[in-house]
Structures are given as structure tokens and as C-alpha cells.
Image 1 (cartoon, rainbow, N blue to C red):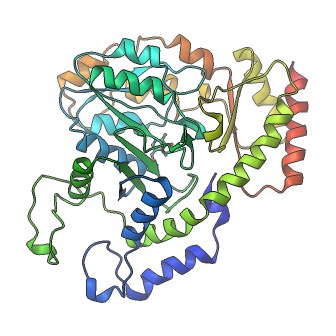
Image 2 (image 1 turned 90 degrees about the vertical axis):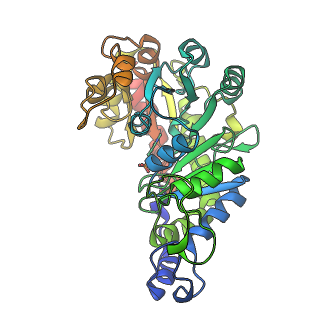
Length: 397
Ligand SMILES: *Cc1c(COP(=O)(O)O)cnc(C)c1O
């Protein structure tokens, strides 16, 4: 991660196909487009690659989540369970749906703790939304069992984990629906873009319609199409989809590089007995975009961050002190800083968020350090980096 490190003539060729006809829209203009249907082609390529029945491209990972929640029928009065450690898009999409985000603790997988999820379920719960953070998966067997028991949906936010798998199945294809992001810093990128995946035909039909103003997409005359449902516009452009096509072809190569680089760093750090690594429910399925480990105490992880800085090591995070990914600094959410009125249901459901403590999550996130695995490092650079990291960590112990 990120895929832009491997941009070359393949992306340029795909984009030039689109520019050669000037048809930038994914629907219609059949006679003008010289056979180029980049969005459709990318959807089919994703279906084949990830072994899933339906892929619906969108303008972003966030709108893919919006779309998934819409087709799952999430709206006013519903609750969606999400983790305390994720990107802000998780609660944004839930609030956009008019539903209430219910934040619950993570465990040493850095993803939803199934025990905390089960405790948070109420008659209003409609969806459990695990987030496969930093390239690796949540405990999907446990979460799926909870969802089945309570008859609620499982929606995988796999935005950071394309190419990862769980027990042989691609992440994002295991729940009722799953989403990926193709924003500029993700494992593969379209510039901006996202996709919603599902194996359920009825959800796929609604996703196709909802993402394009409710169009039924039947027949050859867009203007004459009917609107079975009210929808929205989450259409990806042909230019973005074109970039994604070239990037998807590089996914295997990207994963291979990530795994190789991560292995070198992890082996080196494993020589330090004070370090523990993030638990990965299916290590085989790790997409290896990050190496995440825990120091014994929060104080020590702060010191490691300082030492990394001193030693000139880049691209790592202690998310406890990060504004984007952890509840501790989400004051705008806790204070409901909405531009427009928010329903009483959401207000009531979230009134305690400012005073709720998430000690279990704090315990893991404050001790965690997550290091991005880059694609452009040479083997020598990775080896040197590994040694520097070991020296830096040992200097604070
Ligand atoms: C990137 C990301 C998103 C949102 O994707 P965008 O394409 O940037 O809208 C959602 N969830 C997670 C976990 C992400 O990392």
C-alpha cells in the first residue's frame, strides 16, 4: 500500500482509451464509445478476482458504505454497531442513512470485539459493521454467528484490506455486503472510487438502481427508463474506472511485495521479547499493508514514536493520538456537530458517547504502533529499516 507507487503506462493506456472517445460516463452513448465500458469491465474483473456475484462501483468507499446501508434497508430508528477504531467514514455513512452509530470496543485484533458486539445488540440493531483495519480481518466467524443468531446483517468495511481473505474467501465477500475504497492512498486506487460487493441478487439489483437515481437500466434508452425506487448519484466516471482496471491487474504483485517486506520487518521485531503483535484471526489471509504491534505500556509506545522520529523512520502511527482513526479525538462526533438538524433518535442514542469510556480499546490503541508497508522499498532499504526499528525500540526499553 499504496498502489500509486506502481503507476506506469498501463494506467495511462486505460485512461487514454476513454479520452480517445470522450465518453466519460459509464452509462449510455453506446454508438460513441468504441466498445469501451471501463466501469462495467472493472466490476466484472472484481467479481472474477474476488469470487463474488455482484460488484457495484461508486464514487468512493464512503458512498459504497452509504449504498450498502441503503440496500440493507438501514434508516430512521435503526442502530448500526461499529468499532471505536476505524476511519471517520464509518459513522459518517451511518448518520447519512439516518441511523444511529453504536460504538463498541475493539480487541487485540484491532477490530470489533465479538463479546462487546453481543452486549451492544438491542431490538433496533440492524447491522454489525466490522472494519478490517490496517489490512487484516476481524473475527468473522464469531461476528457472523452473532448476526445469524439475532437475524441482523453483517456489512464488512474492507476499505483497507483488498486482497485479504478469511478461511479462503476474499474479505468483503463474506458478509451480506462488503465495501472497498479506491481512494488515492489505498492498496489499489482509482484516484477516487469505491465498490460494494454482495452475493445476494436482490441487494445487487437495488445497488444498481440506487447508485444511479433509481434507474432500472432496462433497455437502450436511458431517458425512457423507469424508476422502481428513489435513488441517488454514486456513479463512478469512466476515467476513474480506467485507472482502477490497470491497478487491479497489479493486485497480486502488490500483495506479494507487501508480504515479503512485512515478513522482513516482523522477523526483525520478533527478536524483541517485549513486543507483541496484533492478533490476526487467519494469518494466511493478511493483506500485509501494515505491521501492527503492541508495546507493553502506553508510555513506552510514546517513547518508541519519539525514537522512530530520531532514527528517521517514517510512515508509522500511534492511533491514540491521531485525529482520524480513533474515537478519543472525534469531538465533532461526540458533540454532534451537524450542519443540519439531527433526529431525536440519533441524539438520544448518542447522548452518552461523550462520557462513555472505552478502556479496553484505549488499552490496545494506546500501546499500538502500526507501520505502513511500502511497495517502492528495495530489499536493502527494508533490511536497513528493520535494523533501525530494532535499534530504536531497544533504545527505549
Ligand atoms: C478509506 C476508508 C474509507 C472511505 O473510503 P473513501 O474512498 O476515502 O471514501 C472507509 N473506511 C475505511 C476503513 C477506510 O480506510
